[in-house]
Length: 240
Image (cartoon, rainbow, N blue to C red; front, side):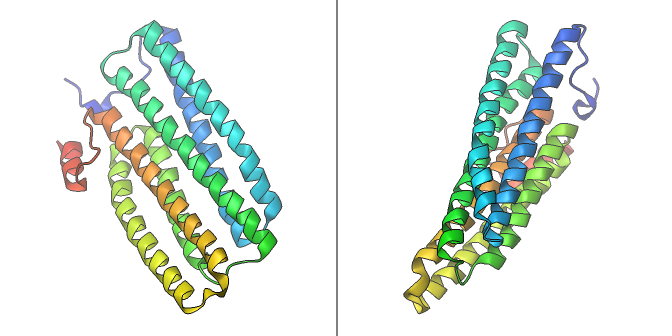
């Protein structure tokens, strides 16, 4: 029996089935590229007090929502018409799950954009922007790597992303504690600092969704559900 890591999708006798799977993957990656840009632009809008860019991010969320509906419909049609089994079924099921994560990443970018617009009008908060940029870069890298792992059907980067998610959680907690301490010492900017706190929380959630995508890549390739399992357990699955 061939190594399951060497088994590729899209090698069916039916050329149309191959096209359907390829199109599903392509649309998912297109949506992933859009939401990654949305997160990047939302952070830039905040850092640069660029209300116009924030509005573009907020309005662009509709495109993400439309793509989610299109991908869900295509995935459902593949299941109904092709009745995929084994690895192909895992691919389609994983895409349905992962597209929901991408849509939620888009929602988090929209939240950040809305807060960036508010802060551009009221004036920047006195603290928290360095932490936003640092955690923002971290979770954007996780999202990009999770999409790359999906494109290459490679579970190895997925393990690294699971580990990175724990680091992001710690970075978020440290940043939130620092900002809370500042607000307790100087109450004049509580409203602005709370906006930054919500932005940090949104970025932490982006990291969670990137981790969810990574876990689904492992499911696609290995056929094992690693949700709610330790990273060490997932590493054993990959190495087996």
